[in-house]
Length: 124
Image (cartoon, rainbow, N blue to C red; front, top):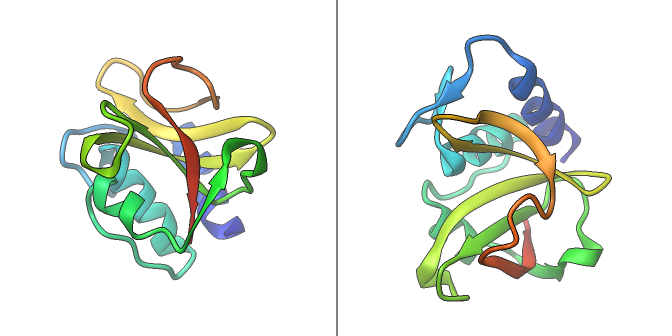
């Protein structure tokens, strides 16, 4: 998944790339559009929504066992039906994601928000 993580990191540094609700590129992305585009760079397909991406995981791994390219999810009810955000783990305790219009496409710490993070990540 190095192609996916490299692409994601490069996009966070690319001028003119921004958060766009429902966006899937090439300049505007929402969270699931961003992970979808990153996986396409690695020749892998994902469903379009964050909830469907959670459900498509081949394996679920604890957050302490994440590897670059795994996806991390946030859910308002702790299950797939409540998943509302997704990010790609890039290693060293960091994630790349399309957060919102004010913060845009960024790299943050894995635990940037203490609320609603699911206890497992998805591996594909």
